Image 1 (cartoon, rainbow, N blue to C red):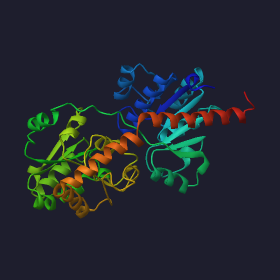
Image 2 (cartoon, rainbow, N blue to C red):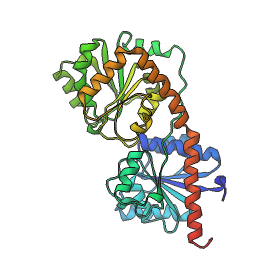
Image 3 (cartoon, rainbow, N blue to C red):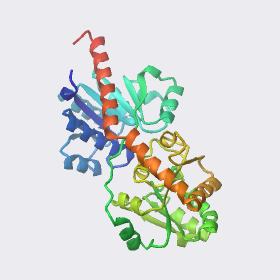
Length: 364
């Protein structure tokens, strides 16, 4: 079977657009451009279905009942078997679990986007794609066969920088004279923004013009604002909420900081590297893979306030080092995390799984 004749059904268990959903959207576009027939099954209409519509990608809804809902499982079974694909690609454990109970003999590839805590959702998967070494290690530690898992890093769409936009954005945001430390992530405990705020007093003692800019929305919003007030650094913290102009904000920033306690992949960190920003990130998710050679940025342990402050201060105090990190990061991302590479590695998994399934069925 040729790649262009493949019919793939992607299954996701959410309706918004976070890191995993953006990955699905980008992958569907790449596969469609390659000539594959691509469909998506998701619980309900939302931001993801709107984006799929915009890109002309087929989708069907199976309802919000969840992995244990008989109605949702029946609807998913109907989506699968009324127009059977050659292969199903499930994203995240909930989707893998649902497909495992409804797919019949259709081969299933699942992608683990985060640290795997239970092997049960992946029991019905013929193969598991892991987005980082850390994710794969967590899967194998639970007993999943190593020959049925591999690492395929997520990729990013390169952003074309606009000439003169940096100065314009900094002026509009009131950052003209600030040293902007940017973090893009949902405002939840796992993303570690509170540690960045706690590191600010030490950073400000070195650079009084430092400003921590948090982009994202979430339940920790009020807590983070109160923490900044209590530490006396509120004037140096900007919480912007969810934004649609993240690439422009990256272009306007001086340093990128990802203080996460837990990540699956962390596409935001990769985007910052691709923009040529000097980056500081914690040892979680795929961030160590992105900084694997040591000259693409600074890798620190999670929840270490002094390491955050020390690393940021080092980049501020040593501009030549910051430039070196930024240049190497941009080159490395373009080389190792390009969309072409992701597409080829994913299609290689598909071909292997489909061929194996055909052999096990006696060539049907």
